[in-house]
Length: 159
Image (cartoon, rainbow, N blue to C red; front, side):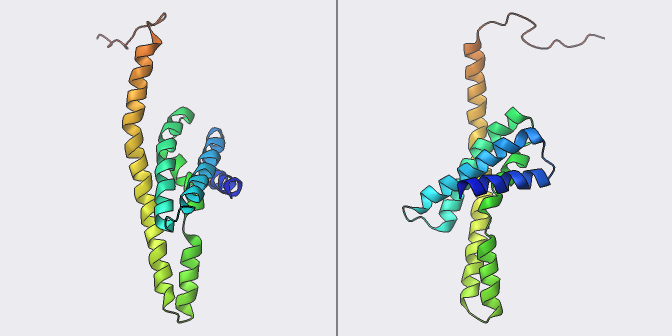
């Protein structure tokens, strides 16, 4: 499942014209999101909670990876959560509703819950990642020591 999720995330990124340097990280994040989803489903979490946990993990990792591959975080995170989208729940709900079964509405509500948990989880993940990245940058600057070449800050151009 993780391999297929990573492949589908990278394929979606490729079809969305993402830079080729970002395809491997996107595939790895997509596979990692599927692993988090699978591990959260084991203890008995529902589909929506497991999707939210995977989306938070994908959001945190995507924010930091996007800076390294020099693409906007939205490019990485949207492609990485594609394997988690509730396509089967929507299809099942529509098929049940078309046959007149009342459980179709329940399947559609489940799909809506998964979609909402994915969206909110990704935003929460990026919200968590912003201060972490800022503090990591401060620590890196503190531990790097003195610069040997070039100014510490860019000087303003005098007119």
